Image (cartoon, rainbow, N blue to C red; front, side):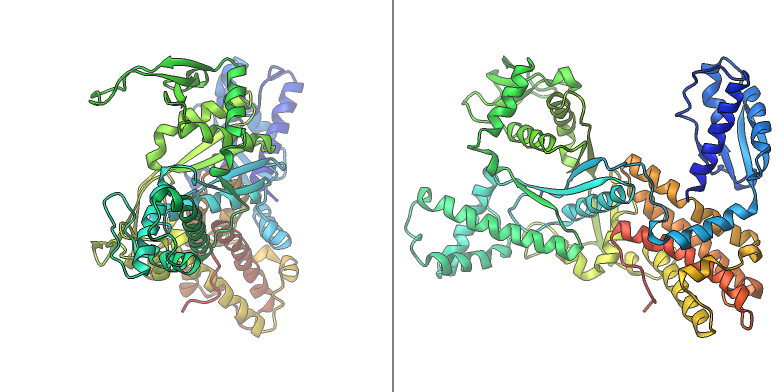
Length: 581
């Protein structure tokens, strides 16, 4: 059940009727007509913008449309009043029984309550994390991992077919640096002093890799030139780092469907084929780029390169795909990789990058637009930085990592559920503070605790009701007499439960899983408000001793809220609390 969608359908039917009566012109586009909660709950239960968005194309005054629509809607038994406000907004009040129907529907549908058909099976590829395989994941990777995983779960809940994908950047110079760093740890394993020069990776995490290299190669590589050991050690070290990364992701509760390798694109003709496809479209040419804006680098000189005419597809400047020495730029394999995703039949692509990749957005979108003839959209989400705090001080660097705080450091101290939820308490493009003391405190100011406390309270009243002989199965509770649920605090909770399908749809359409975290906090607030009212008004307590019928109705409301909390936390990758410890 999606009450907001049902009422929107009612509005659309009313507008269609007005058109048939000749009171509205034919051919109006009704796609922008929306039904949503009013900004001020005192104005009604729902509001529609129909008159405002149709006035101009209809050539009518908004208020005239709103008054005609109000009269049409008022004839439906689900609408108790339809009031025109301001220049043409229409506020609706609904029959109380509709809110009780929402409770019954949530219980009957269970975890499927709130699922919307918006995705219609559309295949979406979400590429996220994609950390260079040069060390353990750091806290910045962690936020991107949580965001990507939650977004994938959200889109799947909204009816999309989702693939989670990790792109291994194992084809660039950074993996050669990894190999040289691992070689020094290999020397160290043989009792030699490692030469960790500037530019190498200093973290202790490579010490076990050095030991593994010793066990595998003995001392056979000690006196060999780099040209003879680089490729072998690079493969072993990269495999070891990817194993570490997989372990880190598992610790965070993230499981990828596909791992793709950049290195696997080289020597296969895929890069050449992708560039050839662009060339066939007249988008590849030899040219010289203008000097970069701002201060001119001392070593800059104009040179002829192979360029992609990305400006034809919305970019600011054309982009090089092959250097003057004939080697590929970093952009070229990325073009081939995205073409591969298009070839795999995805209907839409989502890339999740760190904030430092902002300059990459337009060129990548231009390439996908050109390769797919504009048929496959690419949405790129940038993840802003996370600042860690502990005891009022910035959290110090990890010795194991050498230069940064690892994902494992954070999860082992704060816990997976707390970490995941808190990473979604801000929009992805806003900076995030992660204070270890605050994310673990038990207060309303800590969203994850507040939501989990709501889950625990629901489970506690379910146990108490069961002890007094109430059948607490969802099927039984769905049949309870809900007519006693008429207090404003109870109705407020029902209204919030009714918003769940709409919230899922909006969050999925915008690719914004943080909206789920915000909604759960609001739902928990309404639940706690009702609970606290029961301290002063015994009739509002969820369990009424000696009155199984009233208890069943109130428990049905609590359980319906629990269904939504459980589904929402499931999207975020958080386990609902059964009790608070």
